[in-house]
Figure 1 (cartoon, rainbow, N blue to C red):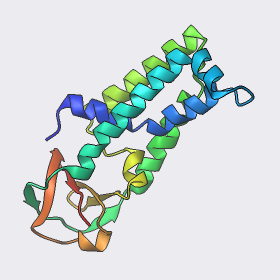
Figure 2 (cartoon, one colour):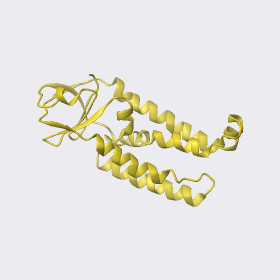
Figure 3 (cartoon, rainbow, N blue to C red):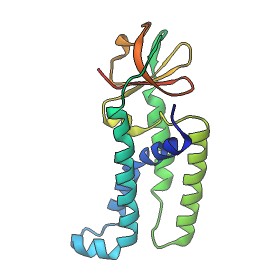
Length: 176
């Protein structure tokens, strides 16, 4: 099972595309890269730190070992929930203005509130990086959440499937 700290890191990683979008938003493409790095050094440093944390955190899912067996009922895709989460929360956060303290405070509060919900409700499977790296998010008829690279037909109504238990009723299958 994942700790709240690791769930928090997964929350941070779920916003990786936002960090990249903000770096693009803060850039002046009429100026050199060095000019942009100097002009936005604090913002770029914070965003690069978040990108490194995001990538390092996410590597766990690619390399962790399956240590349990689980049975699954009929399975269906819930990938659309990931997209809904992404669109709902990413778009407002792109309004961040690095030189406006009110914008920074409002966005930090929004980020914090979303994070508390994400962690307390075990919503860490709503991470767009899963889709980018070939994982799908499924739910079986017993409300178990499955994050897997396997196609739906290889999981649905199967028993003794090797998994890593991530949370209450949330499982990872990282092998095809």
